[in-house]
Length: 267
Image 1 (tube, rainbow, N blue to C red):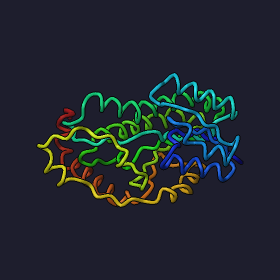
Image 2 (cartoon, helix red, strand yellow):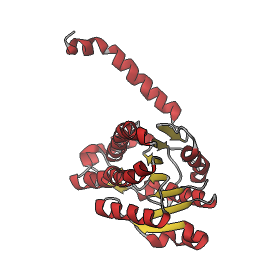
Image 3 (tube, helix red, strand yellow):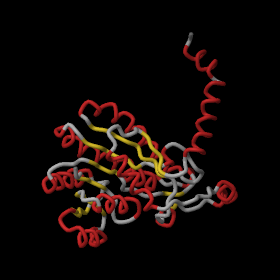
Image 4 (cartoon, rainbow, N blue to C red):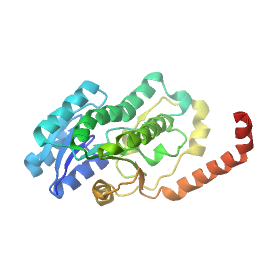
């Protein structure tokens, strides 16, 4: 049975891969981008199966209008992929208020606006999938990526609540957590003006990434969209081993300090 998708951020990167994967198997896709001219190869190849929509996800009114437009033309929404976003690099002290607000406006609030816009449609259908594209950076953190992590951890948290709220309506929600991929993420990332006091720290703590092949995510995302009981959290890539170490250390620390925790309870 063919599905109808609403995918944000489809001009390049993972969003483009997933739009093409859905279209190639005969599904229909409402594909959003800040620049719809970048979607012309999709419309040329797939015709009416793709509905290109210009969308800035930070504009809540525009988001609701885009979703209404998609439903009017496509009839329903089976899978929504909240993929639009970007990275911002900078030490926490270096990030300006404007930079941090812009990062949250796109990565967090944009995701929330799309989610709010599609929920009435999915509740009426009594079915639907919402795939929140967070990151391994939504469950761990690197030096110099604080603004990006803040936005992705926020998406993870609100989605934990959302999943409990909408399950009764037949709506499934998944935090999809990709690791590094060769999408040009770092090249396109916004950057704060560097404070020279952090130069040595920047060098000493700079992460070294092994980038995966974006095309390899296609089948994985389709499987998540199709499976009867999708996971609440799922990695794409090689993140698990390192994240296991981080969470093991957190558990060790929490257990070590449990006597203090209970003392603070007053029992």
